Image (cartoon, rainbow, N blue to C red):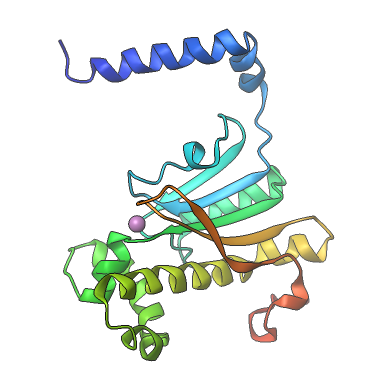
Length: 211
Ligand code: CO
């Protein structure tokens, strides 16, 4: 037996269970997707986006990377956001971090991860900007968790500085950006940033030209 056979068996059971509930489910989905939410989360296997918020296929557009970063030169993430906002007209962008994030821990404790160091560098910048607050926390676990929260806040700002997001607001398209954090130890989500849904909440220095 192939060691991956279990996954195919699981898939068959999963598809059958959904079909039993709604016989036309996959047929309808194959025609189009119409999600209202874009989820930007960590690649960590313990933070499965759809399961956490109880949404079915078709309801959540998802982008995941190490430590849920939104980097203004990352064509991958920028393309996802562009498509979500411009084409799918999603109404909510959720940046969701999690406590105990390995990427955040590596940035804080100076671990070398090879190629991933370049990516983690984005979180080092968040640490450096907030070093007084972070270094004021003595407990090592609490320190990582604080930087996890500060990272979410920074990535929410980064989303709001992207032209397609600001252009949507200028055009009157309903769009809100949210910052959440997930507790791997208790399965609970928490909002840690006031939602941003208009241009006047964006500092002038980050406004897109002409807006
Ligand atoms: Co993580």
